Image (cartoon, rainbow, N blue to C red; front, side, top):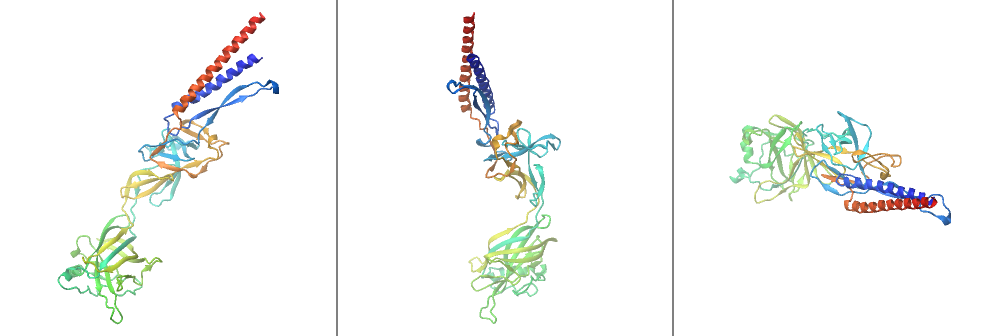
Length: 466
């Protein structure tokens, strides 16, 4: 009875080592497969009924031991849409079943070698489509949830609503008139605003083109920049500063230095354009500190925002602008040059643009860069976690299926990060597999030896009976 038991036990050992050899073979074969998780072999002994004094080593059974949670090395690929997860999480994917159709069964994978196919879907090397959330590049709002699809979308232009400005205005402006010995302020009453107590900008003041030369002789260049009208059309905005009142601290009442800002109604030339007053009196005290007009919105930090109503250049109405000056951003201090020194100049509009390139953030957001040098979020990759990821059921293409033991998917990275332009390599160690290969081969041969010896013993017993 013990000889037959030895035969059966040896056979179970051969079977277990054969299973281990199959796993080793698969691990070596997939050592270069992105996102592959090697399968180890676990052995368990089977103990038959026995007494305390007649214990007998039993047969063996082999089982798979998964390494789904064991991180593989991250490798840079240079492909911007490739993604690797650093941490415990899985990409949510589905199998495509037809033109624009999917299986409806979510799979989970670490294989992140995603690239755009001909239809604009992000698919990995196993032809599994990445699922997640598609976003509107203009507003950032959710368009749909499902397969991520990136097309050569266009970002609409954005109207300029705000200009951030900071500069120093010279105490003695170097105007052409001053160079000729006349440093009197520009004081044409139909064009200037000297009342800083106005409740709203005075939009009626302007310099007609016929009087532009006199204005140019008594003003200095201000900021020039491109702003954008509704729809993203560019508008070339040229401005000039004119000092319209000198400081007179001994006057009754005392007078502050006052400047006015003008913009050209045409981009064709300064001498053939009307110059429109923005409608505000920019006052400065004796130390050169800016004193915001009454209609300015003054923030807690000391910043001042002034409204410039209905800017129109070359007949294009760019709408209302907010002229924002940070605390201490606008001063009147003496300079040797006598010109305006611009320190801050920025606006928040941009033209329309088409998609130029893609990138992926650490949160799994797919960001598009457009030809207008603006960026916008286009989609968010679907990522899930599991309470027991090693209990996921392996499927083809390096994907896994949810099981009862794995628990339901938990949306989110849960501390993991997404690394764009990278893929996770196989966690299979070829050198380690070779070591296991040798041990498995020796164990298999030893079991064969046991079977051979047991057979010989059985033959000896039968010969003795004869």
